[in-house]
Length: 144
Image (tube, rainbow, N blue to C red; front, side, top):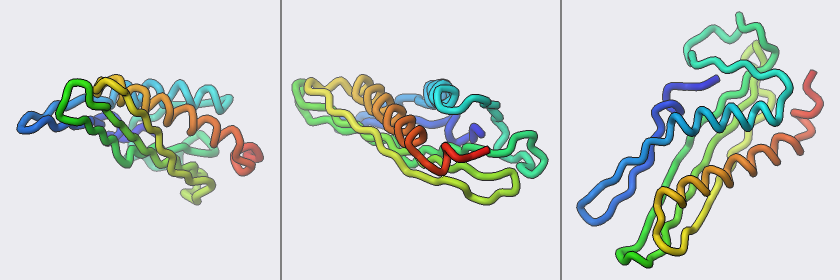
């Protein structure tokens, strides 16, 4: 289930008195869907966070929630840019009962201060770790 919070996600970078806002929502939604399709055989994407889950046609519902997207850079052009992105992945039954919940963080350090690249690579790291965690989960493997 894709929530409005995920669709509207952004990251802010502060440079002295300046603030750069980096929209992330569209990419988060797209790549989250692609990763879930790599893990599960039958994926239906719902963008309605206020639907009645008990009336859903699916047996299980995965709800990704962005916890934070942080990045920092030093004052010099050659200062490294650091980024970290964390998501909570929650799988529930149609009844609302929690089946699986995991918080995963992706990180990256760009040696020459490339803030956007650091965020992109942190998100790639997050998706890789998320996919590995889901594929290795005994609980998720045994779902029917």
